[in-house]
Image (tube, rainbow, N blue to C red; front, side):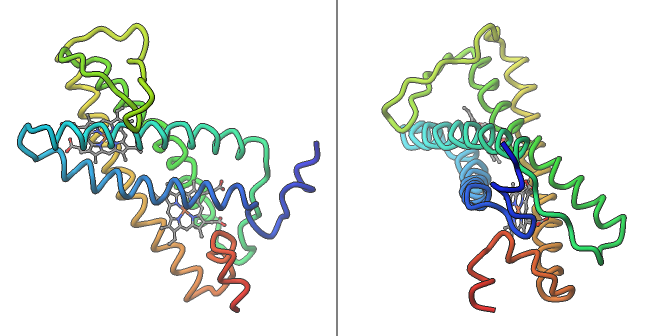
Length: 191
Ligand code: HEM
Ligand code: HEM
């Protein structure tokens, strides 16, 4: 199967754009929700919020795996010629780090709840019982490690996001090279 037929060199495919924005919105919601729920007193409301956080988090994990699979089998459009080599390197680094984190953060969350000695069930969207990660011992110290990893990697997403949005705005308003429109095709139709 030829990748050039399926993926024009000028823009991302509809599948890539849809997955990019779906995952972006879910992740921003997960970070805000995660930080909010963390400090709540232990009530049924908090328990309920944790279930939603776990449901959307596992959704991100599955979507991100699908996205990685898509990315590995489809070519991305080339970066604009005018970019300096350090800028191209920074873009590649950010994208690879994002792919790692959008899988590693929800995975660490899942490992955390699996290692918890409380052994709380996860029921996705109040409908689908979701198992713990097989073979993970229920141990408070291990749970604590996964919790730290989950939290710090979520902070790393925030840091990358600041760089990523800054770069996207620079491409759009300063370089005016159409890079933002590759991810927001509507911009192309207007301009
Ligand atoms: C992209 C997906 C996810 C993001 C961005 C995310 C982000 C966050 C953030 C920012 C926090 C607050 C950190 C803290 O203050 O300790 C948090 C807490 C938490 N997350 Fe996630 N999370 C995701 C997926 C998941 C998944 C899949 C699970 C479990 C299946 C999960 C379970 C938890 C739990 C149990 C907490 C509360 C930890 C505590 O009480 O300290 N998360 N998450
Ligand atoms: C947590 C949220 C986000 C994540 C995880 C994320 C992740 C990514 C990744 C991994 C790529 C590379 C795609 C590939 O080559 O396969 C990408 C591309 C892109 N993203 Fe994001 N993104 C997020 C939010 C945003 C936001 C808010 C904007 C706009 C302000 C944006 C604008 C772009 C643009 C314009 C590209 C295309 C870059 C290019 O053509 O080389 N992203 N994003």
